[in-house]
Image (cartoon, helix red, strand yellow):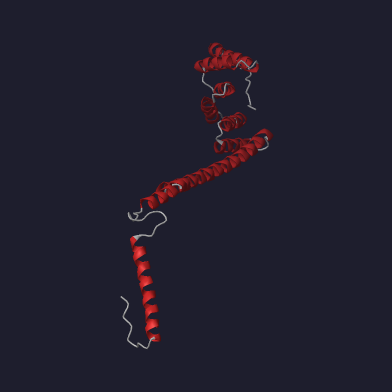
Length: 239
């Protein structure tokens, strides 16, 4: 909630009264438009009043009208100028209060906290400022927590991407299981076979080896027969 400033009419000497009254009338017209929630018209009237006679009251109310139109950056400038120019502690405190609200609306909670503190230095017992300060502190804490969680999430996503990339490279280095099986079958098919061998028949090498074994067995049988006949010659060596 913004703190708004309504000005009372003050008349001075006749020569200066016309000019002052003109600026004051514009301010009063702006206030009426503001109360009627016609913030665009109020802004126009305040700007005209400031052209006639610059004042911190005009800056303050202009900032309020701009704030209600959610142009927070422009409102910040007006509230800051009003806070710098005003010599009235009450108006100065309200300017800092509204300045804090503008920062709060921009989610700049650290700046809002400083503005509320400046307001409370001038009006320590102001309940609205105390409440807004507590809200700004809470929001800043929540914002930091969300930023921390987001950073942790981004780091985890980066790790997951690196791990997936590493696994993908490993998979690209070795063929898939189906392809491995096909390669093994292909290698087995590519192994050379003996052209002389046929299904269900012995190869030449196997036949020769079997014949050699049979010859040795036959020699052993003949040797036994010689011994049984009294021939004690030394048996031949196997080749």
